[in-house]
Image 1: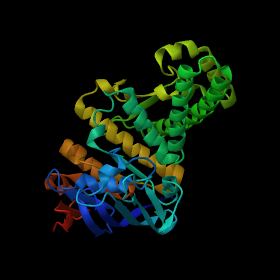
Image 2: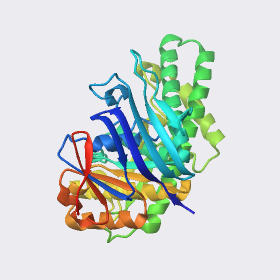
Image 3: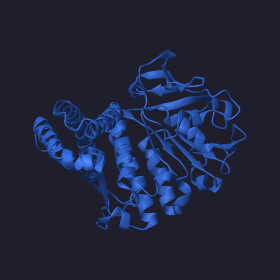
Image 4: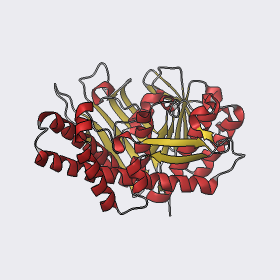
Length: 379
């Protein structure tokens, strides 16, 4: 049985615009309104830190500390999670050289934010993602890895290890060009990590594409997407033994040493993969669709991903939607709210215009954000 995780209390200490906040909530739909700069997105960012990675802004930890504080911050939540009620926390200690962020589960240290995934999964959509389909391959690759990370909490550490191994190979090509033994060892590590990263991506995209195909409705206000990967290794691991793909890639790295040395970087591998997205009903590349169509397509893709997380992890994720309703026409806005309510996830939405939430008054808990506080908005 799938369990819907729900955040019931959020406590912030010296985080962004919040010197201190203790906010209890029971609702499944939580709508936050207030002018630009009021701190709405800061609340969603705090919740996004309860996952592996750098949160929805991808900001440095030091940038999250309150301007009038000592450089430290803390984010804590009480969650009715996949394994029952639990207290989760993360933050940064003060100091001239702050270390990695602290991770707490039931107020006890945990080794990695990946441990949060046993209790809580979080997915999100922000305005910064609006240009995803027309943007760079690197942006789409980061989006892809975030999709994988919500399903496989260890994926981020493998991606980071692959990037580190690639940097090591690049240095060896420059500094020890004649020492084949060092390069053989480096390329063995790169190939092992590359296959692990590629396999996780390929499996997630295959499953997500299958779920979307099951539910595809050409008449939906959120057009269905067709997904593919532009990556030789990702496509190969779906049809061939992983060991064979790894050995072939290791051989290609060896052959490409002169070319990669001249370029100063590795020119082939999963670090260059692109996520290809097509507007399903129109059968055109997503980047060629109108701005409104791209927004609806992306929203549909994120919601489909949330359903995949629920299917694979056995827990319905918390969904964070930043300033999403303001850019939807009334028909799509109403359809979005109906879908969110039917899905059963806890959803946190933000919007500068309170009228954007008029359709869910009485169904959602609506709060006005400002001056580091949240005030209930009367129905």
